[in-house]
Picture 1 (tube, rainbow, N blue to C red):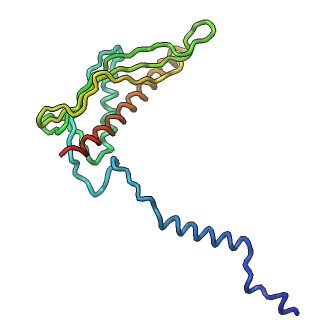
Picture 2: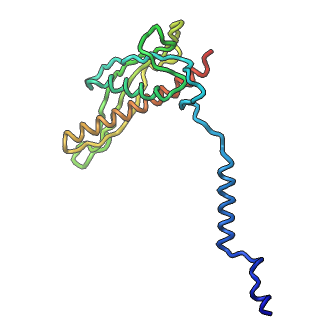
Picture 3: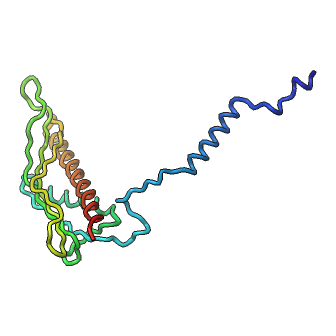
Length: 192
């Protein structure tokens, strides 16, 4: 009778079953993948870009000095991520040419306190741009009046308000850069 009670060879405990299940789950998870790859990120197999882009410094028709150079650097940073498009600075080398203008900045109040003092302003930036095929000077994409809004908080300190406004302008520039990056890649993918 003692032999029957002490026989533990065929039984497994609950934590052991969880451990086996967890190991099998990790093995199945590591062997499978969805196969997604970012088509806009650099690919080591495609070292040679298929198109070259001339980024120009946009005209700045606003009173924000230096905004055009900040946006130029932001756009350039976006296109440095690409393996399909290479930024060049000589017009003769460029397949595509992007020109543009920052047309206007408007600062309408958005939220007011009980004394009609603005608490938040929605920065409204209007710009235009044109993407041309440099080989035949045809227009591939043109926006004549494109507007983006970005709110920022008014602070009693004028310095803090200027800082918030600059951050809002940077967020808009990054948003424009992303829009240009994605749309120009779509255009390049559909070009012969």
